Length: 109
Image 1 (cartoon, rainbow, N blue to C red):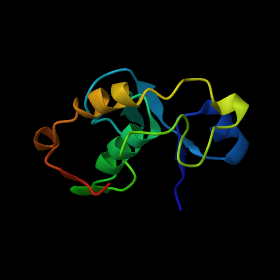
Image 2 (cartoon, helix red, strand yellow):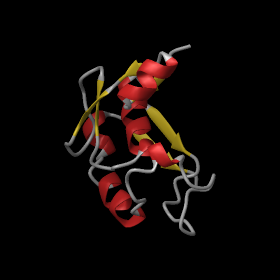
Image 3 (cartoon, one colour):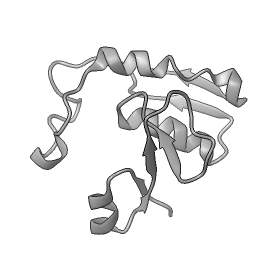
Image 4 (cartoon, one colour):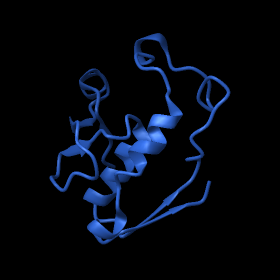
């Protein structure tokens, strides 16, 4: 099983494949790199699914709202570097135009 991360520390600590992050909108078309316009792991996961050949991506748990933390609570201190700004996440998702990539994205949240 292949396992991915955008964290150098996690890559080294857990032997995960490291993906480069590029601060660009839309989806990366280059294997080994994901775009970060969404500023969250869900956005990265969509990009990775596309890179791995998905033509239909079904989203679960992408409601982009919270009561001050993620559904699982707060990240560990070393991972909680960036505040969760759900409004900016929604704006980031708007930079993905599925038709430009030949994919379908269905939000089942």
